[in-house]
Length: 245
Image (cartoon, rainbow, N blue to C red; front, side, top):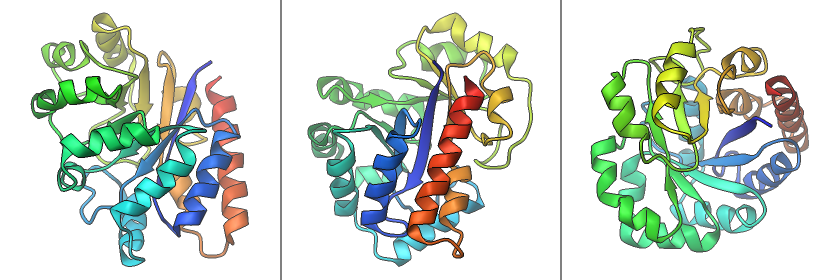
């Protein structure tokens, strides 16, 4: 069974909504929930996620809200935090990683933390049974792919193309996939540009998909009330899970 990872922006549109949505997604085909940490300059994310980040910050997001959301969701749904390194560094990684683990969070996704710098935290992650998700991109050399994935934990985040999330570019990923799988038996999940229309094609040869902008697009629709947003997100999750399997 191929896996579905869903990204949502924590506290957008509000904390209780994030909790309700996260729990419902876990009941409707989502295997892992990626709780986004709102940040003012989310450089790897497309316009939809960037807009949700800014709205969450305008509405008063505080790091404690992420902890409260995680406390409610992580014991029931496999949960990761996705954020930019400055957000985590400000909390003191030596304290934050044990705290995240105590809440039931299983790992971090930090797109702007280079592999070489991430190595300095590997013992901290290991001691707390946490994964620091490894990224590989089509622009990486085979030698770099080998270095990055050799000790990858939980899953490898395969960037489907060079660019930002949500643009849905089509590329032949099979050669790239084979390069990754040559050096690691860790599952490979495809991210960037995955939605209900592209998921079936993108997942070929991979073990799962990571979907963000397609869910955030629903959350940004002012014409929908909270209940309708949750219903539509759950419907989307079930469609994509069916498509990839």
